[in-house]
Image (cartoon, rainbow, N blue to C red; front, side, top):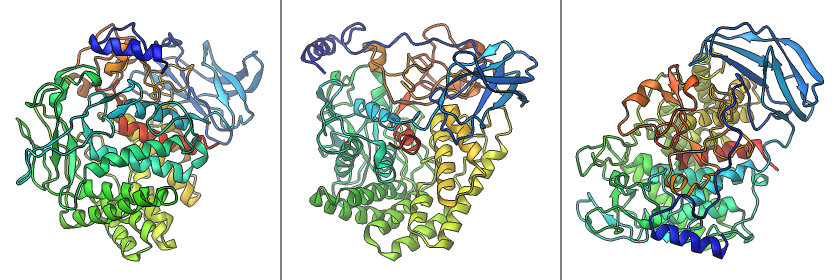
Length: 599
């Protein structure tokens, strides 16, 4: 940020925010296309399945299609359009399969009077995009925030709901805000830190070095994804200060009372405006200081995530920072031991509202922690524990289901199966990939519709869709089995535009695409700042949208024509259920993009 921009931003913050004051303005963009041919706006790898979908709001006959160059020269077709029934607002859908077209270039698809947006094919269409979610994560930083060029939430925090240490101050500034409020959870932060490290380990060529460790522009000799992971790990260490105190949450929904920029620090938890926020520990019993309580019974869901992030961090940073790696190693062992001592989930704590992360599974987290510790230590006992936990967490229960509670089965795909399979025996790999296959088969059975989507459209459906793509991709990479390649590609395509609204669900991707211009985020509303790389919550069942508290659209619905079915999406900051970017989703989609856009 230039000095002039910093001074302008400082003036905005001091006055509470002015819409025209300093950061980059949201571009006008292409608007909402009226074309009913939906495509992946980023593009397609030459060897990938390629299917566009016609979403017809009224019955119509679409018998064939063709693919043409931008100059109008036919390169494929005419080919038959495959009628695929109703879906959402679509009275009819047709699948237009052009997978045989592998030549790099830019094309359009014609079907009757309809013509698609530009279709890109090429080996490099995804290159560089894995770094986009890092832009969002930097914006979400607590402590020093490079977007605001100042430190935020510096007084955190005070321990609450602990039998002996309640009221104690413990320095816990840092980490990432979970979404567009400023609450911070180990549940999502440890998973995000692990996925950043995992992405660099698996696909280092997807990342570059353009930012310093504090997030300001300038190379520092360390890949930016590792800088961001270290920022997350530093906060996680503060949240596990000693082997007997495992903290799980910073802040609660009292933050929601203020729709304000983080440097203004408007929340008051009883210690004064802008003061410390509460730190909730894992206790193994139900928590909630105000009207509502969660259903926590143990530490293990959080402990396993701590152990995994610390163990992979120790592995990845050993060569560059021996002292930090040694600390992470010791903390990983201690966290895993606490998880074994206190089995069960450590859910997030609600406040005045009924919403919290209702995570009911925990064996998958302990499996991941054990697998990461085996990779770090070569102690075969950890691999044995990983396999034992895997047998109790074979398939994520949302796969094949029609609904689930909020974050009930988080993380949305079992990261531990892949980690345990990487160093497992042949029989162990066959067992673990068999679990993956069972889940994919259950989703595929629900995906007999024009878009080939089979997830439940609960809150944060885009995170589920990303995890489906990741699980299918990892299954294919481990086994060489392409049975679910089409399901994998359909999930990817949905995220980037092959959906009834023709919207990319990742802000700013592609730069010339149709994506959210009015997300539920203070910085977007007050400063017109574009949150590049943020994965939106995504479409939800219309019944969920109608029954959530505090939702009201602030303008006419530009997608009203496409919101007449059982699922809805709104590009409106008043809709936090479909149009709010999420931190853990950004890390999840970063991992997916690292496979698609390896340099």
